[in-house]
Image (cartoon, rainbow, N blue to C red):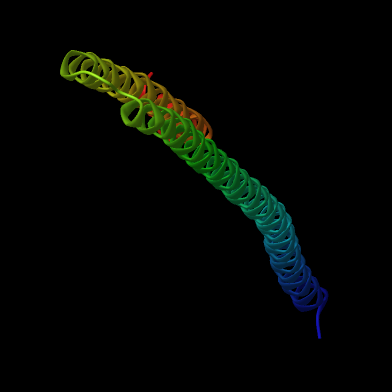
Length: 173
């Protein structure tokens, strides 16, 4: 082999080695970039998953609190209704006692009447007392009913206002 052949052979070998080295370097760079992109993607996916999980936990926590608050409001409303019915029943019982006592008194007075005029005067008095008693009692009972409705609806109104704040106001702005 001549020196020229050897030089050519060395030049060809050197060129092949340079091409192989460049290919190896390019392949290593591509693999490194792919590995980095995969690691970055995994890191972003993991962060996104953690964020979504935290949002789900927060949402569940808010839903649980909201449900508990609704249950508390319904319990408070029911307690107000029960208290109202108790007051109403007490009013009916008190009215019945007073009416019975007044009616018994009138009966005794009717038995002691001596003249038709006295009977008519007593009849007018009894009618007036009965009408006044019924009107007065009706006013009291209506007030008890109105107060009961107001007290029973207050906690429910609070929950409705809360729901409007949470669900409607953010979108209204």
